[in-house]
Length: 190
Image 1 (cartoon, one colour):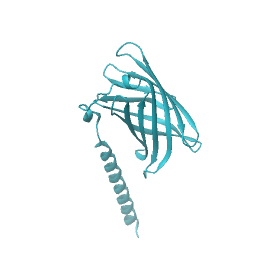
Image 2: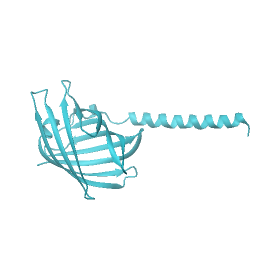
Image 3: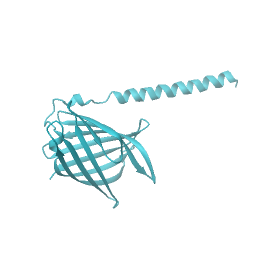
């Protein structure tokens, strides 16, 4: 095999990889948008739903769909400030099936345009989200402990209000654009 053939084969492999990655990225852009839910009811007001005490029940599934972690979350949520400038505090206490525990405290703020921002100790930068109809979508990067290391993973997090008491949550985790797994939760107001 001469150099020209070897170079052409390498170029062909690189081109095929680039096409596959581009197709994958474009397919990811074709998913649902928050505006798709604008007419859905009941209408979600994040400040109203996440106010008081809630319980959540969830699972983490790996990319094959296998449940690898089960957990419950006890939440205390409150909002303070003037209308349109409220700041929310969502305290989440996690209990995992393996006996381990965790805690995350979110600080949320609703902007004048209806968008939300959020911060937590293990969130890189700010989470950004928006509600429409019965849905809330936000994205953020989380520092996730895995096997004694911490890795940054991106979350595409969707919540759907089902009734005044129940909300369903589905979040896809990605690293470098590749799907790692999914978190599925149901929230129930006490």
